[in-house]
Image 1: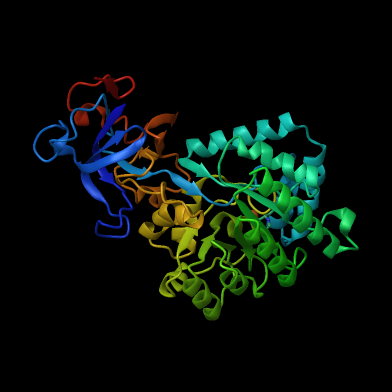
Image 2: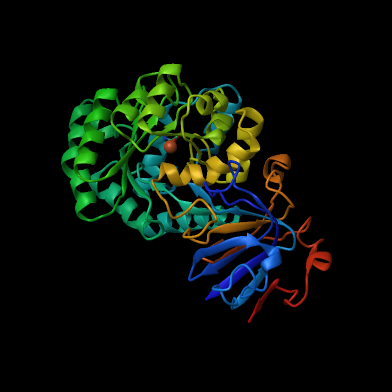
Length: 428
Ligand code: NIG
Ligand code: FE
């Protein structure tokens, strides 16, 4: 199946071969062949087979973006989606002046352990569907609310049915059973959980919450080293609540990403840049915990690769909207709009060590959203407004939202000819 997406007012490609951070193309079109992007060019070349692309031949189907912007699908590289219960009262207490601590996680651990597999999976499905409708086409999912061998493996088994980006985060907090013997729990993670997960291919990643009230740097180093030896990729929750040495540790251990990175010294940033460890910033968590917003300009100036993720979880922040994170990043973390869009797409892909997603250029999986807006800037310009009109993954449409502002208004004037007005598509 070959699909031509055309009449794109502004296309974000993230193609490093094109000028600008986002490699944007005006009046663009691209061809999808068998779920992958095969060609990107001008919408003037709509009738493929002539002029510049004699080898491409005609498409089977045409999708008109009607002048709207098209962006790559968001790559949300940090999420805790296997949980039961909720903590809205904790959020309200924070807004009234309480501060966030790792302690609240225990509430969710108790609810999650008591939930059935079916309940956990139903909650996961609902959250994934919601994320998809806000333009997220790749999702990382962590365990970490089970904290027993059986409960952690069960979470990963469920997660693995929905994504290839699964993460063992048994080292989230110390389970109550090990309160007096933290190192015995670290032993359990290293000696039982990591080997089981590796043997059963249940996780691609291991993550550790390195923080006061969670795991020490020494414990984190032991777990990350064991994970690497077992062939798993690693990342760390680093410097979320305090300015410890976790960012430098992540760099030294060769982690793909250090996440949160709320508190980062110049030395921390130098270490991340030198190691090629991505800093995954989480704007919606700073929002929901009233933490200081880190200044992204420092990270970029230091040459650090930056990702933006939602960190969807019931405690520190329960927004799974990447457009919301982008708006916060631009307004409060001093990202340029271009940097924020890039960080939520190509940046997330880099944090997940993925080369097949995060952009729209030849070879990439055809994951993208048609916006209900004429330009990508609108994502930050109109915060809180649903502007993801249609979402595609692997070239297939997987979500559609009512698109009352731009997209529908342009139907008459941008429709060039011959496609069905109902679904904006035709089959040839
Ligand atoms: O990324 N920092 C640790 N873990 C999550 C929060 C988990 C929770 O509060 O339930 C986070 O913020
Ligand atoms: Fe997290």
